[in-house]
Length: 178
Image 1 (cartoon, rainbow, N blue to C red):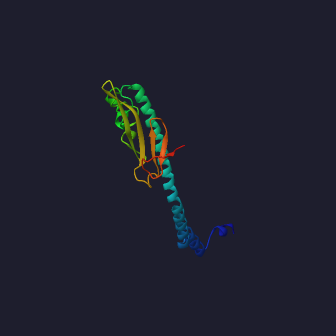
Image 2: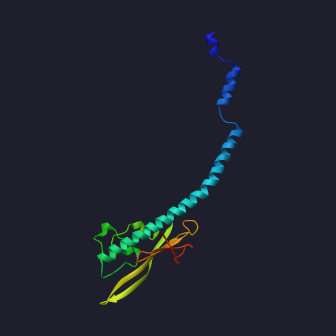
Image 3: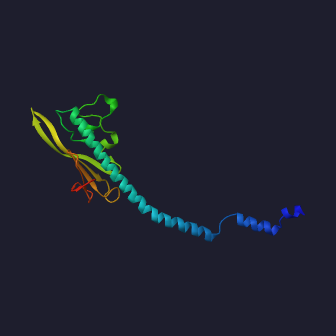
């Protein structure tokens, strides 16, 4: 009798095999519907998170440029500030730092494009002292490469360290960033 309890009829075995072989069409449609709903919710949120992360990266990169400018100005006092990103960069393997390649920022930022933003140093004010041009002020800018997609706001940082934003994504920075 114990042996009989372990044996199944052919019909019970066939029903168990059919149930173990997979999902019904209705179950698959329900799972696919749930996945689609989650994707519709997650994709716009992911875009907003990416834009916010790009904006934070742009602000931090401008602060890096400001720190590099401070080091550059103290290392090369006759030159003052650098008026382009390439002067702040430079390859450590190409020799010692110089006024044209100070090696104070990394190569990615020196290209002017990082995390969906385009960086530049503009509005350099030059003073002629003893027949040598000295840059006494500058403005570093960061604008979204694709406004609305890689970022919403543009950022400006002057030589005094005041960071402002342009809500339209340009360089008309009027709103203080905190």
